[in-house]
Image (tube, rainbow over the protein chains, first blue to last red):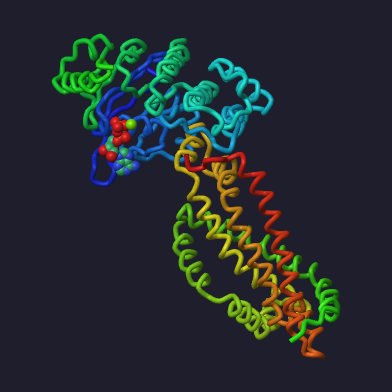
Length: 254
Length: 236
Ligand SMILES: Nc1ncnc2c1ncn2[C@@H]1O[C@H](COP(=O)(O)OP(=O)(O)O)[C@@H](O)[C@H]1O
Ligand SMILES: [Mg+2]
């Protein structure tokens, strides 16, 4: 049974039609990886799913909630947001809070979890991501990789129906990318539903149950990683992947 | 021209008794001003329909009006209209009951609201968009995000400007001699008027204001170190 069902989702910025009618189904526990060129609308799609952008039209069902996106209310938006969590490319930690407080914030303020309980949860997820000894560190005292660990821990602690990852390793130093990818693999592969935007094709091949290729605001191709990445049927997908391999090439010379 | 040190001391002892009044007026005005200023800043920052535009013009107009004029105009308006307005509202109070001090506080509070609204608006703009988004993404409403994430980051940013406003308003209390409030400067000049030793009077008043400014600056510096430390690199 699908936990997310999006139909004909459209989004334009002024004259620019960025998403041209997206249909998306995600099953419980499924890991969906979205790939596509820069500017194709991947971030916008994720942001529409937790209403950081308001889609222009379409329908959206998430777990027990459903709405017509054109007429969604503030109350519905908050309800939808409480069922999602987002891991940002630039981490998005609360700069005025410690690692532990960052995680408690959504629990205590938005979900009314008692402080003590939230503090315990925060402690345990931070331990899970390897930062059990940095509870009181503030964002400016943490490296990029550590900040993203907190970001991931924050999303986990909220125990959402779905975690949205928007290029979680793109802002990291190259040598930190793999350890964060490993962490993400760990946390999503135990039955979490996740939608992940990434340019790390190997990782995508590895963790995805489903890969979706988006180009120019449309889903061009979707299927298993073996299908989409290993044997793409559409010309645009082939071109993107070829370009992508070309773009990667300099690394082979190192 | 000689400087009569002994006389200066005499003036000093008179003027220093007005420090509590000056600080009281300044502090009340600043407190009221900060509350209204924050309110105006939020209305403008969130572009609340109607209010946003209204306060944009409001602030522009009053920012460009000299303090002396604002104080005099407030005073005259109150003097000429207070009793009749109070009467038509069925209140039995008169101008004399309210007292000049409160008119001074009102005028300075007005001036400081305008200044604070600008300081806070700038500070709100200094908080990066991703802080709002992070707050919304964990399920917070606009108000929750404002209280728990945005203001705790914005207010420390506004400390240096708020310090300038506090010093400006404290010095501004001296203008209230225009409306007959006897504060530091006026008390000094009064003491000097018998012998026309105004130089001593001005120097003494200046020294007292100078001392007050230093104390205020120290207090704000302390607040800045205390609260700014948590949020280094706010625009990251
Ligand atoms: N807030 C915005 N205002 C105007 N245009 C935007 C905005 N956000 C994104 N866009 C445009 O939408 C398109 C898709 O952007 P995005 O979803 O960020 O792509 P991707 O994440 O796939 O690189 C781009 O052309 C981008 O310029
Ligand atoms: Mg993007």
